[in-house]
Amino acid sequence: MGKRPIVIGVAGGSGSGKTSVTKAIYEHFKGHSILMLEQDFYYKDQAHLPFEERLKTNYDHPLAFDNDLLIDHIKQLLNYEQVAKPVYDYKMHTRSNEVIMVEPRDVIILEGILVLEDERMRNLMDIKLFVDTDADLRIIRRMLRDIKERGRSIDSVIEQYISVVRPMHNQFVEPTKRYADIIIPEGGQNHVAVDLMVTKIQTILELNAIL
Image (tube, rainbow, N blue to C red; front, side, top):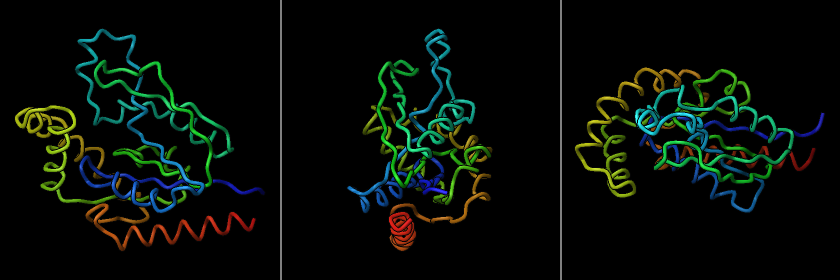
């Protein structure tokens, strides 16, 4: 049996710090055989819907994601095949015509709020992480991000958090914690947890080099 890439799933609520964890691990191995695959790139194509309907999209619900395509891409990468990662246009609320070509690597980090929600996806993972951060920190981080990067008002961020983000987190994201092999409190600020993951990945890379 030949070597197979290792898949690491990193889940957690919006603003939990899961992206920081992912980037910290990725940066450590920059230049090595590692890639990041973000679930946010795999929102469903909505070009067939009127723009007014697309505006109603709940991006925190499992049905917003095209998991079938994401799973197909993971399987292709596991076979060391190149994939065309879609690009989502948030202004038009649908998939753009662009794609990003992703080359296969020995380590695949799969990051997103609901990557542990789909059993089919979990079954492809070797390590499952859940970044667990208090709700007050998560809303502050989301507020700062949305105001700074997306030009949102404080009122609109709070309204969205109360009406959509919080209930979706409680209903869909938080329950996936039970599937995690490792729960990391405080995201990228937890340097001990990140160092442990780096050591584990380093060991796997060294074993793959021997095989």
